[in-house]
Image 1 (tube, helix red, strand yellow):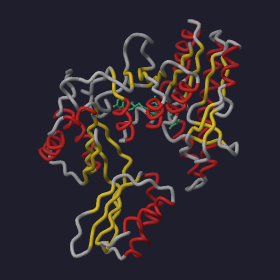
Image 2 (cartoon, helix red, strand yellow):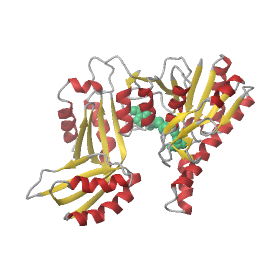
Image 3 (cartoon, helix red, strand yellow):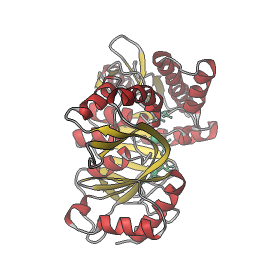
Image 4 (cartoon, protein in one colour):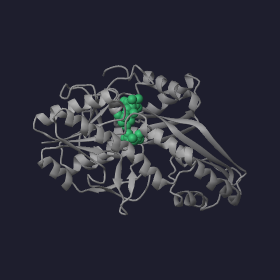
Length: 408
Ligand code: ADP
Ligand code: ASP
Ligand code: MG
Protein backbone atom coordinates (compact mmCIF):
# COMPACT_ATOMS: atom_id res chain seq x y z
CA UNK A 1 0.00 0.00 0.00
CA UNK A 2 1.12 3.54 -0.72
CA UNK A 3 0.85 6.16 1.99
CA UNK A 4 1.04 9.87 1.17
CA UNK A 5 1.52 12.21 4.11
CA UNK A 6 2.06 15.96 4.28
CA UNK A 7 3.52 17.93 7.18
CA UNK A 8 2.99 21.69 7.37
CA UNK A 9 5.41 24.44 8.35
CA UNK A 10 4.80 24.42 12.10
CA UNK A 11 5.07 20.62 12.21
CA UNK A 12 8.59 20.76 10.75
CA UNK A 13 9.44 24.09 12.35
CA UNK A 14 12.41 22.97 14.46
CA UNK A 15 14.98 20.19 14.68
CA UNK A 16 12.99 18.59 17.46
CA UNK A 17 9.78 18.64 15.43
CA UNK A 18 11.56 17.30 12.34
CA UNK A 19 12.79 14.40 14.46
CA UNK A 20 9.26 13.80 15.71
CA UNK A 21 8.01 13.69 12.11
CA UNK A 22 10.85 11.31 11.21
CA UNK A 23 9.72 8.92 13.96
CA UNK A 24 6.14 8.99 12.70
CA UNK A 25 7.20 8.39 9.10
CA UNK A 26 9.61 5.62 10.04
CA UNK A 27 6.94 3.78 12.01
CA UNK A 28 4.70 3.65 8.92
CA UNK A 29 7.58 2.52 6.71
CA UNK A 30 8.37 -0.31 9.14
CA UNK A 31 4.80 -1.53 8.67
CA UNK A 32 5.81 -2.34 5.12
CA UNK A 33 4.06 0.59 3.46
CA UNK A 34 5.54 2.63 0.62
CA UNK A 35 5.65 6.10 2.10
CA UNK A 36 5.83 9.41 0.25
CA UNK A 37 6.06 12.46 2.50
CA UNK A 38 5.44 16.01 1.31
CA UNK A 39 6.88 18.78 3.48
CA UNK A 40 6.39 22.53 3.74
CA UNK A 41 9.20 24.94 4.51
CA UNK A 42 10.19 25.15 8.18
CA UNK A 43 8.08 27.57 10.26
CA UNK A 44 7.91 31.05 8.75
CA UNK A 45 10.68 30.42 6.21
CA UNK A 46 8.56 31.37 3.19
CA UNK A 47 7.58 34.70 4.77
CA UNK A 48 11.23 35.38 5.64
CA UNK A 49 12.37 34.62 2.09
CA UNK A 50 9.70 36.94 0.67
CA UNK A 51 10.79 39.70 3.06
CA UNK A 52 14.40 39.22 1.93
CA UNK A 53 13.35 39.51 -1.70
CA UNK A 54 11.49 42.77 -0.99
CA UNK A 55 14.52 44.12 0.89
CA UNK A 56 16.62 43.93 -2.25
CA UNK A 57 13.81 44.88 -4.65
CA UNK A 58 10.39 46.25 -3.58
CA UNK A 59 8.86 44.57 -6.64
CA UNK A 60 10.88 41.38 -7.04
CA UNK A 61 10.58 39.58 -10.38
CA UNK A 62 8.19 36.62 -10.18
CA UNK A 63 10.57 34.08 -11.69
CA UNK A 64 13.34 34.71 -9.17
CA UNK A 65 10.82 35.00 -6.33
CA UNK A 66 9.68 31.46 -7.10
CA UNK A 67 13.25 30.20 -7.32
CA UNK A 68 13.95 31.76 -3.93
CA UNK A 69 10.77 30.48 -2.25
CA UNK A 70 11.33 26.95 -3.59
CA UNK A 71 14.53 26.70 -1.53
CA UNK A 72 12.49 26.66 1.70
CA UNK A 73 10.93 23.28 0.93
CA UNK A 74 14.26 21.92 -0.32
CA UNK A 75 15.82 22.61 3.06
CA UNK A 76 13.07 20.87 5.03
CA UNK A 77 12.89 17.85 2.69
CA UNK A 78 16.66 17.33 2.77
CA UNK A 79 16.71 17.60 6.58
CA UNK A 80 13.80 15.18 7.00
CA UNK A 81 15.51 12.60 4.77
CA UNK A 82 18.65 13.00 6.89
CA UNK A 83 16.68 12.60 10.12
CA UNK A 84 15.09 9.43 8.72
CA UNK A 85 18.53 8.11 7.81
CA UNK A 86 19.64 8.74 11.36
CA UNK A 87 16.81 6.46 12.54
CA UNK A 88 17.99 3.73 10.19
CA UNK A 89 15.11 4.34 7.80
CA UNK A 90 16.42 4.68 4.23
CA UNK A 91 15.07 7.84 2.59
CA UNK A 92 15.73 10.18 -0.32
CA UNK A 93 14.71 13.79 -0.69
CA UNK A 94 13.47 15.01 -4.07
CA UNK A 95 12.72 18.51 -5.31
CA UNK A 96 9.36 18.97 -7.02
CA UNK A 97 11.08 18.66 -10.39
CA UNK A 98 12.99 15.51 -9.40
CA UNK A 99 9.72 14.02 -8.17
CA UNK A 100 8.23 14.63 -11.64
CA UNK A 101 5.82 17.44 -10.72
CA UNK A 102 5.17 19.31 -13.98
CA UNK A 103 3.25 22.57 -13.99
CA UNK A 104 2.29 25.44 -16.26
CA UNK A 105 4.47 28.56 -16.33
CA UNK A 106 2.38 30.84 -14.07
CA UNK A 107 4.93 31.95 -11.49
CA UNK A 108 3.50 32.31 -8.01
CA UNK A 109 0.34 30.31 -8.69
CA UNK A 110 1.21 27.54 -11.09
CA UNK A 111 -1.15 24.64 -11.75
CA UNK A 112 0.04 21.06 -11.77
CA UNK A 113 -0.33 19.57 -15.25
CA UNK A 114 0.84 16.09 -14.41
CA UNK A 115 3.15 13.99 -12.30
CA UNK A 116 5.55 11.55 -13.83
CA UNK A 117 6.06 9.08 -10.99
CA UNK A 118 8.88 6.92 -12.42
CA UNK A 119 11.56 8.28 -10.09
CA UNK A 120 9.39 7.91 -7.01
CA UNK A 121 8.44 4.34 -8.01
CA UNK A 122 12.11 3.54 -8.54
CA UNK A 123 12.97 4.82 -5.07
CA UNK A 124 10.09 2.81 -3.59
CA UNK A 125 11.47 -0.31 -5.30
CA UNK A 126 14.86 0.40 -3.76
CA UNK A 127 13.17 0.43 -0.36
CA UNK A 128 13.36 4.17 0.23
CA UNK A 129 10.92 6.54 1.84
CA UNK A 130 10.53 9.44 -0.58
CA UNK A 131 10.48 12.95 0.87
CA UNK A 132 9.16 15.48 -1.65
CA UNK A 133 9.59 19.25 -1.42
CA UNK A 134 6.01 20.59 -1.49
CA UNK A 135 4.68 23.82 -3.03
CA UNK A 136 6.86 23.56 -6.14
CA UNK A 137 7.10 22.11 -9.61
CA UNK A 138 8.85 22.51 -12.93
CA UNK A 139 7.52 24.65 -15.76
CA UNK A 140 7.72 23.58 -19.42
CA UNK A 141 10.82 25.83 -19.71
CA UNK A 142 12.46 23.98 -16.83
CA UNK A 143 12.02 26.83 -14.34
CA UNK A 144 11.16 26.43 -10.68
CA UNK A 145 7.59 27.54 -10.04
CA UNK A 146 5.47 27.61 -6.89
CA UNK A 147 1.80 26.73 -6.51
CA UNK A 148 0.57 29.65 -4.38
CA UNK A 149 0.77 30.15 -0.61
CA UNK A 150 -0.24 27.02 1.26
CA UNK A 151 0.33 24.97 -1.89
CA UNK A 152 2.07 21.98 -0.27
CA UNK A 153 -1.42 20.59 0.42
CA UNK A 154 -1.96 20.54 -3.33
CA UNK A 155 1.38 18.81 -3.94
CA UNK A 156 0.30 16.09 -1.52
CA UNK A 157 -3.15 15.47 -2.99
CA UNK A 158 -1.76 15.48 -6.54
CA UNK A 159 0.88 12.92 -5.52
CA UNK A 160 -1.76 10.83 -3.79
CA UNK A 161 -3.80 10.73 -7.00
CA UNK A 162 -0.76 9.97 -9.17
CA UNK A 163 0.38 7.16 -6.85
CA UNK A 164 -3.13 5.70 -6.45
CA UNK A 165 -3.08 6.12 -2.68
CA UNK A 166 -6.36 5.28 -0.96
CA UNK A 167 -6.29 8.57 0.97
CA UNK A 168 -3.99 11.52 1.63
CA UNK A 169 -3.02 12.42 5.20
CA UNK A 170 -2.47 16.13 5.93
CA UNK A 171 -0.81 16.72 9.31
CA UNK A 172 -0.95 20.20 10.78
CA UNK A 173 -0.96 22.21 14.02
CA UNK A 174 -4.68 21.72 14.87
CA UNK A 175 -6.74 18.54 15.42
CA UNK A 176 -8.60 18.79 12.10
CA UNK A 177 -11.20 20.98 10.42
CA UNK A 178 -13.20 23.00 12.95
CA UNK A 179 -16.55 24.78 12.88
CA UNK A 180 -14.41 27.91 12.51
CA UNK A 181 -10.76 28.88 13.02
CA UNK A 182 -10.10 27.81 16.66
CA UNK A 183 -7.68 30.73 16.99
CA UNK A 184 -10.63 33.10 16.54
CA UNK A 185 -13.27 31.13 18.48
CA UNK A 186 -11.86 28.82 21.18
CA UNK A 187 -15.32 27.18 21.45
CA UNK A 188 -15.03 25.89 17.86
CA UNK A 189 -15.56 22.12 17.53
CA UNK A 190 -13.46 19.72 15.49
CA UNK A 191 -15.64 18.04 12.82
CA UNK A 192 -15.51 14.27 12.15
CA UNK A 193 -16.10 14.86 8.48
CA UNK A 194 -16.92 17.59 6.01
CA UNK A 195 -18.16 17.41 2.42
CA UNK A 196 -15.52 18.31 -0.14
CA UNK A 197 -17.86 20.95 -1.64
CA UNK A 198 -18.14 22.61 1.77
CA UNK A 199 -14.40 22.47 2.37
CA UNK A 200 -13.77 23.90 -1.09
CA UNK A 201 -16.02 26.90 -0.40
CA UNK A 202 -14.47 27.37 3.04
CA UNK A 203 -10.93 27.22 1.62
CA UNK A 204 -11.80 29.66 -1.16
CA UNK A 205 -13.34 31.97 1.44
CA UNK A 206 -10.23 32.17 3.59
CA UNK A 207 -10.19 29.07 5.84
CA UNK A 208 -6.40 28.78 5.56
CA UNK A 209 -6.29 25.24 6.92
CA UNK A 210 -6.44 23.76 3.39
CA UNK A 211 -5.23 25.05 0.03
CA UNK A 212 -8.35 25.37 -2.19
CA UNK A 213 -6.79 23.55 -5.13
CA UNK A 214 -5.92 20.59 -2.92
CA UNK A 215 -9.62 20.23 -2.09
CA UNK A 216 -10.50 20.67 -5.77
CA UNK A 217 -8.13 17.85 -6.72
CA UNK A 218 -9.54 15.67 -3.97
CA UNK A 219 -13.01 16.18 -5.47
CA UNK A 220 -11.80 15.55 -9.00
CA UNK A 221 -10.03 12.30 -8.14
CA UNK A 222 -12.51 11.26 -5.47
CA UNK A 223 -9.61 11.15 -3.02
CA UNK A 224 -10.49 11.25 0.69
CA UNK A 225 -8.26 13.65 2.64
CA UNK A 226 -7.59 13.15 6.35
CA UNK A 227 -6.66 16.36 8.18
CA UNK A 228 -5.20 15.68 11.63
CA UNK A 229 -2.70 16.89 14.18
CA UNK A 230 0.96 16.07 13.62
CA UNK A 231 1.03 15.19 17.33
CA UNK A 232 -1.81 12.64 17.19
CA UNK A 233 -1.28 8.94 16.71
CA UNK A 234 -2.28 7.57 13.26
CA UNK A 235 -5.38 5.39 13.49
CA UNK A 236 -6.45 6.95 16.80
CA UNK A 237 -9.67 8.07 15.12
CA UNK A 238 -8.92 11.77 15.51
CA UNK A 239 -8.96 14.31 12.73
CA UNK A 240 -11.43 15.20 9.99
CA UNK A 241 -12.12 13.37 6.74
CA UNK A 242 -12.86 15.52 3.71
CA UNK A 243 -14.75 13.48 1.15
CA UNK A 244 -17.35 13.68 -1.55
CA UNK A 245 -20.23 12.17 0.37
CA UNK A 246 -20.79 12.70 4.05
CA UNK A 247 -23.67 11.79 6.25
CA UNK A 248 -25.78 14.86 6.68
CA UNK A 249 -26.15 16.11 10.19
CA UNK A 250 -29.89 16.18 10.89
CA UNK A 251 -30.16 19.57 12.57
CA UNK A 252 -27.40 22.04 12.09
CA UNK A 253 -27.06 22.94 8.46
CA UNK A 254 -24.25 25.47 8.84
CA UNK A 255 -21.07 23.41 8.87
CA UNK A 256 -18.35 26.02 9.21
CA UNK A 257 -17.65 29.76 9.25
CA UNK A 258 -14.72 31.20 7.31
CA UNK A 259 -12.99 34.55 7.66
CA UNK A 260 -11.03 36.03 4.78
CA UNK A 261 -8.75 38.96 5.62
CA UNK A 262 -7.31 39.10 2.13
CA UNK A 263 -9.86 41.53 0.68
CA UNK A 264 -9.63 44.94 -0.92
CA UNK A 265 -12.51 46.76 -2.61
CA UNK A 266 -12.80 49.31 -5.39
CA UNK A 267 -15.90 51.45 -5.94
CA UNK A 268 -16.43 53.45 -9.11
CA UNK A 269 -18.99 56.15 -8.32
CA UNK A 270 -21.52 57.60 -10.72
CA UNK A 271 -20.43 55.69 -13.79
CA UNK A 272 -22.61 56.44 -16.85
CA UNK A 273 -24.89 53.42 -17.12
CA UNK A 274 -24.69 52.24 -20.73
CA UNK A 275 -24.37 48.81 -22.33
CA UNK A 276 -20.85 47.40 -22.32
CA UNK A 277 -19.62 49.36 -19.32
CA UNK A 278 -18.87 46.26 -17.23
CA UNK A 279 -16.84 44.74 -20.06
CA UNK A 280 -14.85 47.97 -20.36
CA UNK A 281 -13.96 47.79 -16.68
CA UNK A 282 -13.34 44.08 -16.18
CA UNK A 283 -11.70 43.43 -19.56
CA UNK A 284 -8.46 45.29 -18.71
CA UNK A 285 -8.35 43.70 -15.24
CA UNK A 286 -8.73 40.21 -16.73
CA UNK A 287 -6.04 41.01 -19.32
CA UNK A 288 -3.70 41.86 -16.42
CA UNK A 289 -4.42 38.45 -14.86
CA UNK A 290 -6.35 39.96 -11.95
CA UNK A 291 -9.27 37.87 -10.80
CA UNK A 292 -12.16 39.88 -9.48
CA UNK A 293 -14.20 38.29 -6.72
CA UNK A 294 -17.40 39.98 -5.59
CA UNK A 295 -19.07 42.40 -8.01
CA UNK A 296 -22.03 44.56 -7.00
CA UNK A 297 -23.71 47.11 -9.25
CA UNK A 298 -26.20 49.47 -7.64
CA UNK A 299 -29.50 50.31 -9.29
CA UNK A 300 -29.01 53.17 -11.65
CA UNK A 301 -30.32 56.62 -10.90
CA UNK A 302 -30.35 59.33 -13.59
CA UNK A 303 -28.41 56.93 -15.84
CA UNK A 304 -25.56 56.80 -13.32
CA UNK A 305 -24.54 53.72 -11.37
CA UNK A 306 -22.10 52.76 -8.58
CA UNK A 307 -20.02 49.67 -9.16
CA UNK A 308 -18.08 47.88 -6.41
CA UNK A 309 -15.77 44.90 -6.79
CA UNK A 310 -13.19 43.14 -4.64
CA UNK A 311 -9.73 41.73 -5.34
CA UNK A 312 -7.05 40.10 -3.19
CA UNK A 313 -4.32 42.15 -1.46
CA UNK A 314 -1.80 40.64 -3.85
CA UNK A 315 -3.50 42.27 -6.83
CA UNK A 316 -4.22 45.49 -5.00
CA UNK A 317 -1.49 47.73 -6.42
CA UNK A 318 -2.02 46.66 -10.00
CA UNK A 319 -5.78 47.03 -9.61
CA UNK A 320 -5.29 50.63 -8.50
CA UNK A 321 -2.94 51.34 -11.38
CA UNK A 322 -5.50 50.04 -13.86
CA UNK A 323 -8.72 51.37 -12.36
CA UNK A 324 -7.65 54.97 -11.68
CA UNK A 325 -7.15 56.00 -15.33
CA UNK A 326 -10.05 53.74 -16.34
CA UNK A 327 -12.43 55.61 -14.04
CA UNK A 328 -11.43 58.84 -15.79
CA UNK A 329 -11.93 57.37 -19.28
CA UNK A 330 -15.37 56.04 -18.34
CA UNK A 331 -16.53 59.35 -16.89
CA UNK A 332 -16.95 58.12 -13.31
CA UNK A 333 -17.30 60.87 -10.68
CA UNK A 334 -14.60 59.30 -8.53
CA UNK A 335 -13.07 56.03 -7.45
CA UNK A 336 -12.81 54.82 -3.85
CA UNK A 337 -10.33 52.24 -2.57
CA UNK A 338 -10.87 50.35 0.67
CA UNK A 339 -8.48 47.85 2.20
CA UNK A 340 -10.08 47.77 5.62
CA UNK A 341 -12.58 45.00 4.94
CA UNK A 342 -12.90 41.27 5.66
CA UNK A 343 -15.30 38.62 4.43
CA UNK A 344 -17.27 36.44 6.83
CA UNK A 345 -18.94 33.37 5.28
CA UNK A 346 -21.44 30.81 6.54
CA UNK A 347 -20.96 27.53 4.69
CA UNK A 348 -23.08 24.37 4.59
CA UNK A 349 -24.66 22.19 1.92
CA UNK A 350 -27.69 21.84 4.20
CA UNK A 351 -28.46 25.56 3.95
CA UNK A 352 -29.95 24.96 0.50
CA UNK A 353 -32.91 23.13 1.95
CA UNK A 354 -33.84 25.50 4.75
CA UNK A 355 -34.92 29.13 4.78
CA UNK A 356 -33.95 31.75 7.30
CA UNK A 357 -30.16 31.40 7.39
CA UNK A 358 -29.55 34.75 5.75
CA UNK A 359 -32.12 36.46 7.98
CA UNK A 360 -30.53 35.03 11.14
CA UNK A 361 -27.08 36.04 9.92
CA UNK A 362 -28.09 39.65 9.18
CA UNK A 363 -30.08 39.97 12.41
CA UNK A 364 -27.26 38.60 14.59
CA UNK A 365 -24.72 40.95 13.04
CA UNK A 366 -26.99 43.95 13.37
CA UNK A 367 -27.78 43.14 17.01
CA UNK A 368 -24.02 43.18 17.64
CA UNK A 369 -23.80 46.57 15.93
CA UNK A 370 -21.72 45.17 13.06
CA UNK A 371 -22.47 46.92 9.79
CA UNK A 372 -22.70 44.83 6.61
CA UNK A 373 -20.98 46.54 3.68
CA UNK A 374 -21.76 43.98 0.96
CA UNK A 375 -23.55 40.64 0.68
CA UNK A 376 -22.91 37.80 -1.75
CA UNK A 377 -24.15 34.22 -1.85
CA UNK A 378 -23.65 30.88 -3.57
CA UNK A 379 -25.85 27.81 -3.26
CA UNK A 380 -24.09 26.68 -0.11
CA UNK A 381 -22.69 29.96 1.22
CA UNK A 382 -23.71 33.40 2.50
CA UNK A 383 -20.95 36.01 2.71
CA UNK A 384 -20.95 39.45 4.32
CA UNK A 385 -18.19 42.03 4.01
CA UNK A 386 -17.65 43.88 7.27
CA UNK A 387 -15.06 46.32 8.64
CA UNK A 388 -11.76 44.57 9.34
CA UNK A 389 -11.72 45.46 13.03
CA UNK A 390 -15.08 43.70 13.55
CA UNK A 391 -14.23 40.50 11.64
CA UNK A 392 -13.24 38.24 14.54
CA UNK A 393 -16.21 39.41 16.58
CA UNK A 394 -18.55 38.73 13.64
CA UNK A 395 -17.26 35.15 13.49
CA UNK A 396 -17.90 34.62 17.20
CA UNK A 397 -21.36 36.20 17.05
CA UNK A 398 -22.38 33.89 14.19
CA UNK A 399 -20.76 30.82 15.73
CA UNK A 400 -22.92 31.33 18.77
CA UNK A 401 -26.08 32.34 16.82
CA UNK A 402 -25.97 29.07 14.86
CA UNK A 403 -24.97 27.06 17.96
CA UNK A 404 -21.94 25.57 16.26
CA UNK A 405 -20.28 24.94 19.62
CA UNK A 406 -22.95 22.34 20.31
CA UNK A 407 -22.91 18.76 19.13
CA UNK A 408 -26.01 17.89 17.06
P1 ADP B 1 0.19 24.09 7.89
O1 ADP B 1 1.43 24.88 8.10
O2 ADP B 1 0.19 22.78 8.61
O3 ADP B 1 -0.18 23.95 6.44
P2 ADP B 1 -1.77 26.20 8.19
O4 ADP B 1 -1.32 27.32 9.03
O5 ADP B 1 -1.71 26.37 6.72
O6 ADP B 1 -0.95 24.90 8.64
O7 ADP B 1 -3.25 25.77 8.58
C1 ADP B 1 -3.59 25.48 9.92
C2 ADP B 1 -4.26 26.70 10.56
O8 ADP B 1 -5.48 26.97 9.88
C3 ADP B 1 -4.68 26.50 11.97
O9 ADP B 1 -3.62 26.78 12.86
C4 ADP B 1 -5.87 27.45 12.14
O10 ADP B 1 -5.54 28.63 12.81
C5 ADP B 1 -6.26 27.80 10.72
N1 ADP B 1 -7.68 27.55 10.43
C6 ADP B 1 -8.51 28.41 9.78
N2 ADP B 1 -9.73 27.91 9.67
C7 ADP B 1 -9.73 26.70 10.26
C8 ADP B 1 -10.72 25.69 10.47
N3 ADP B 1 -11.98 25.81 10.04
N4 ADP B 1 -10.35 24.56 11.12
C9 ADP B 1 -9.08 24.40 11.56
N5 ADP B 1 -8.10 25.32 11.38
C10 ADP B 1 -8.41 26.47 10.75
N1 ASP C 1 5.75 27.15 2.41
C1 ASP C 1 4.65 27.58 1.60
C2 ASP C 1 3.86 28.67 2.30
O1 ASP C 1 4.23 29.08 3.40
C3 ASP C 1 3.75 26.45 1.18
C4 ASP C 1 3.05 25.70 2.27
O2 ASP C 1 3.39 25.86 3.44
O3 ASP C 1 2.14 24.92 1.96
O4 ASP C 1 2.91 29.17 1.76
MG1 MG D 1 -1.15 25.20 5.09
